[in-house]
Image 1 (cartoon, helix red, strand yellow):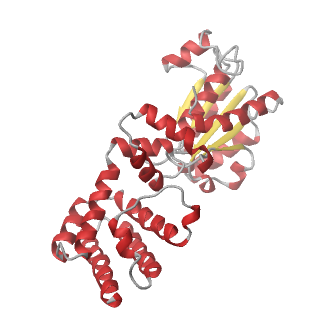
Image 2: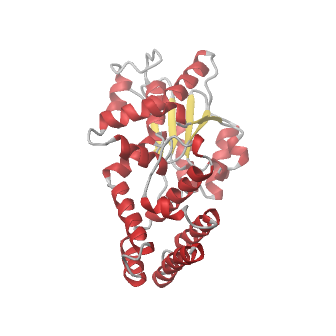
Image 3: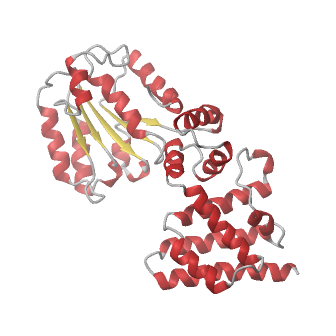
Length: 326
């Protein structure tokens, strides 16, 4: 079974096959957390099956080999240390020259295809210019514009997304698979990763929403004179994980959107800090400046001293806004 939000894209693929327009190469693109690997697995299973209808039969020898995780007609290529080298693509070329073992097609999957170096990309381009018969090459990426235009132009593109209209189906799926996930938690996590259900599931498993809520509570304690600059900046410097800064920034930008266009915001992350921020003069400018400071923090995460100073800049700027209000 495919994830419900991916069914429209899988239906699109089936229509292409039904119209006898099977490609030699395709790009499956979408943000991290949308389900690119699941879509790739569904398509690969169908291509390797000897009797697809169009879903794989699950009973033929080829299906059984695929289920075992060791199919001779499937070659995965993945990045090593965030890099795919030309030797990896040359191995793929050799794979395609051999005759299929038990499947009607030979299939290769390049994960994180945008990490190919220049030599690897040029070697792949030669494969795409003269595609072997009876083959399918799948490139997965969440950064399609990092691929050469000449590679993109030689592949069909299957873009995966999950828009607001699919939220009810996503909500039902997430709550079925995460029984303890409350509607309020789901709404907050959707703010952080709109349309990325698997990212939402991972954040829920890691209790990311409760950690961010604690950071917001501490910021609110500071602006309401319950905590000192030194104690708050020290705590945030030590306790805010690197990947939490873009999420805190996402919350601020969400609040900005709520403040300026509330009718078009369906999910929310309400907080006392939100109320405090938008009671200040020039609140929009202040929030954007805070987001810019967070950008600088993200760029300088390896410089611990500078991170502490930037956190203090955020805190001081918030207090200055309150003084101006007075």
